[in-house]
Length: 118
Image (cartoon, rainbow, N blue to C red; front, side, top):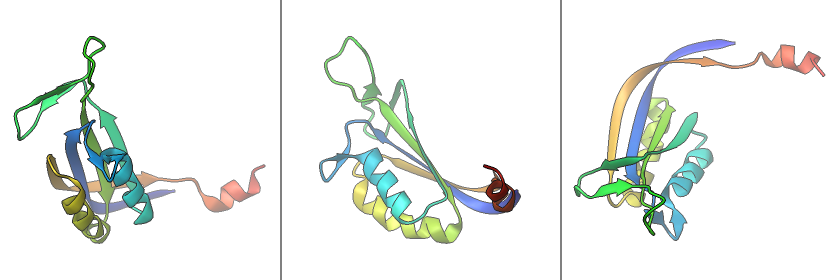
């Protein structure tokens, strides 16, 4: 099945060592996304980068601490993203959120067809 619609995409940037209530921030945000039934949320771990504090974040086998840049891409309708934003306001202490309107093509299996297959 193919569905096309306009949506909102957030790209949330922060560091791997960022936490929310003792839990890695990306896991906490994913939990909220799942709780809100957000359509899509993916976590990417970067090699190196910097943000608003101009502190280089990186991952290296030679360093004791690892603070790789993390980017989360979150996509859903305007209404669903609006429900998520207050949570991000509370959770992200240092980072960047980029927001844009996107056209989405979602492919999914046909439930009637899948039910007939073993």
